Image 1 (tube, rainbow, N blue to C red):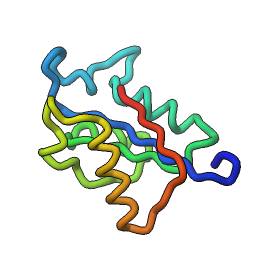
Image 2 (image 1 turned 90 degrees about the vertical axis):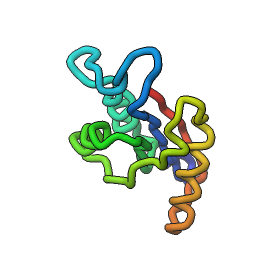
Image 3 (image 1 turned 120 degrees about the vertical axis):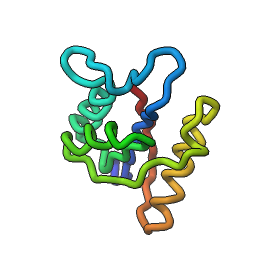
Image 4 (image 1 turned 120 degrees about the horizontal axis):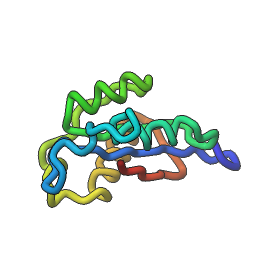
Length: 111
């Protein structure tokens, strides 16, 4: 929380990649790439909630290792190479809003 405002961190990590296959699970410094934004978000004293948006069970399992709340996998229409991060963030906000979870600020972190 920052100045009595709640902060959501959305981490986007899909399994498909055109340039580097499975880049989000490749190890950088002995950790999968997707773990770095998770670690950064967890270290922050300002972030109230972390939402890992992915279409991969393997990436979701990495999130579980860092004690993130398990979320449903991202829809296929938001998991293509043409999908934009903002569309994913809007989808996450709408899902949480429907569950009565509301945030004042949203931070996007990408591996």
